Length: 279
Image (cartoon, rainbow, N blue to C red; front, side):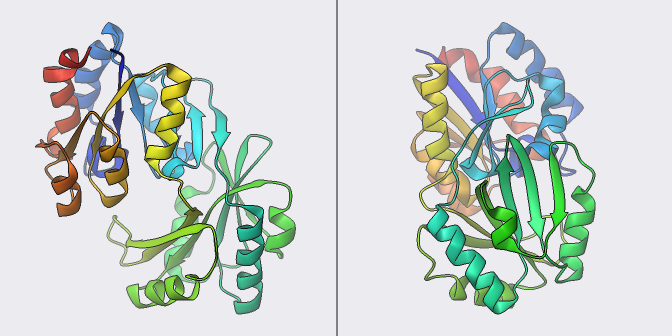
């Protein structure tokens, strides 16, 4: 029975510096040559994922931006998207125009990922943009009109970079009536003190995107690895699921087993020991 092994990146496959460790590369390369089918499922965009995973030369499509994009890493091209409905995009643009709230709107036009924004609302947002400006596969474009900028493209995500939790909670409450979206916020994992609030298409998760990848690849079952709440739907659809030791309690509780931490190359070491059992 064919098995696809699927791993989250930050906090799972990547180390504490958000990099693929030399040890993980050394362990995984021989397995990939033997036939291990490994895919990434992450909230990240192509701008960082292509470069981060280049040492592994993965052939399986990647699930990016929490399921809104399927991506061919080898060819550096978007395979498919799951966009926010036009009705919801219009409602969100109206909210932004009425309130003056600033957002980062991620969209795909002609296969290219572009992030539109109007003004930089806080220092955390400034830092967020500056660290990502100039990377390949993604461009930041300032606009004076969200409706005009987003017309005719697939809008995958609205992101709000906020200075504190109170503002994130207030904004989530204000957006609760917008239909056909999923809204959540979380603390920036790199210790800035800021919070990120994201709006995705309702029902779009890593798990829903993996269903499409199984159809594309002919895979019959999934073995997955993760560390956070957004990995739980992926765990539920898997024949076997592994939470790294540093995972949040909810993810550890939902997994089939707990393995070594991301700082101990837990995913690569588990695959070295067990992947052949799933062939």
